[in-house]
Image 1: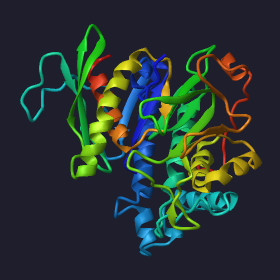
Image 2: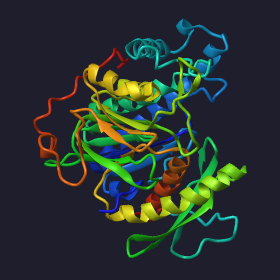
Image 3: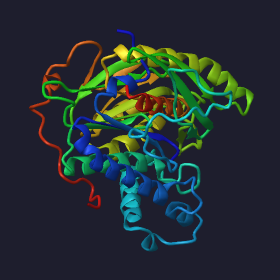
Image 4: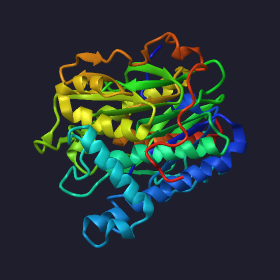
Length: 263
Length: 134
């Protein structure tokens, strides 16, 4: 997928084996799902050289999740964004979610996994304070739009890259231009990441769609520089948010398994 | 508080590891490497980061360290395959450098919304920070 992943794990050196296992998991996901590797299962599947049934089991899981995302977003999420099989828009979030789950299972719940700007926060960095995630300003490079505070939270941002538009509206085949960036928060990065890409492609219709979709909240910057957010978006600029800012002790623990991911 | 694009330095008191999605050695436990710069040995106190491959080409930085703090960041390699690459880097790299230096005092843990070149920059910077033992 050609991106960088960082792990911030607040358990000292004893967490090293768990981090190594999470890194191995990401390499394995890349081998199976990278559209840039001609020999990956996804590349071979896209060329019609194999069938889903012959691929590693997680390929079927991911394709089923993609189908769910396509349905939930009215087709704004697409598994063939460039007329070619490429589930990357969901796989990155799914892989980070699995890495986070693995860290939790191996006794390292206090972690932040960031894959190319998509973030999964596990528990809290330390007792009494939440994680703080800066949201990059899409129109003022180097500045932050706001800071999101939370625990056990997924944060994904879609936007025009420094290289210009790169998200295609699958309904028109043209770049989505109405928004400069859209940040989505929720509990599960698999869907938060896929939905962020889809909602960005929706442009001005994203706000109503996010409002009608349970479990996610959005903050967006339009191409003209206006911002809007949905009512539950947990952002703060300089002071701890009420509730979430209390170290997140009141948050319920996340579900042990979501979307039938293989354990 | 000056807003920053890079949260790298704010996250180092955890156990931090970066990798690119190409096969890549874990860097955190490695000793400082011998200087590998194409322009000759790096000056004393300067630590090179890994060269990180991005979709647009490799990015590599080196950091200068004094008193346990980063004092300067030099960009050793950045995509320069065409005029657009050069335009982008001329604008983006000084900002990334300035923000990384400012991030040492920022109270954020990470950043959502990074993009390709900055990912390479962050990856290379993190590996240099790891090597310097900061």
